[in-house]
Image 1 (cartoon, rainbow, N blue to C red):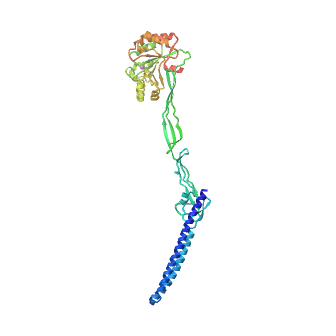
Image 2 (cartoon, helix red, strand yellow):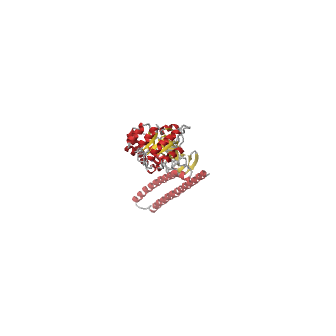
Image 3 (spheres, helix red, strand yellow):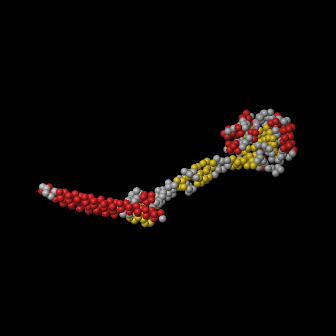
Length: 428
Ligand code: NI
């Protein structure tokens, strides 16, 4: 409907133009010719009796005017015909649909008039939605199969016009690689925490539209592996073993502790401070030589929660190295001062330690309640597989020295064997 209407309109318009031009030619040209002839005729009538020079000249001029006039009239008539024919509407086809256009019509006229419907492609987002209409590749108009370079050129007679819409273009994508720091997981609960899997940072690769920001894909290029720790207590199934542990030494009380253990041929575990080991290295050497386990309790006994991760690492590393320097034993077993240890501290020291060991029974010897109370605290709370906390350093440990022989005797009488923390981990 619309196309037919437009076509009709265009034809009518052209007809009017053609007619107007035609009328102008017909009306103007003969009138001028008539006027010139009348003028020449008048001149001849007015000068019949004039001098021969004038007569001769006048005769020559008249013939010349007549010839010139005739040629001129013929030329003008020919031009008029040419212009007339050239101005006539002519047929073309647009995408196989025939129509008639007037002379001088351009391709752009067809587009503007809606007779040639063609459009550029759109710029699409990565999800296919339109980002910017008509910002894709441009459309193309063909005449006889050849792309039209200038749409403002007049359409030739009989033009066979075809068109192709532009293609949609999808926006570019950008690939972003993001590191995925490993997390730390502590599973379970209990006095013995064991590192079971080191953490590995992952890498995420994301592909997204440059303009839209729409995410096409997110892939884990390198899988993140959490630092994994399992906490548990020893499960001895009734096997009567117990781990006596001594913190904050070595100190001048350590030899007496070692003596008491030797009497019962009992094994204990010493969570040493690096600063104390440096001061009393021979006590740690003796502990090792007598079959005890030496581990670290940091260098200077700080509250790890108040330190930076780097400081936490340094404290543990210095504790380990001081003990290694003194005894040749490089421990990977650690006890946090005050038991203050969490995921962050594990992440800070996972290159140094594989175990963080607290306790099940606190003798509360640090309160100095008297040797009997210390003995009583042990005997009331002991169960197979338990870890008992005592001290051989960090102040006056005479109550520990006094209590230990009784503790050993009572536990032995109750059927207990004394094992190191390492030995106890066989029951995890
Ligand atoms: Ni301590």
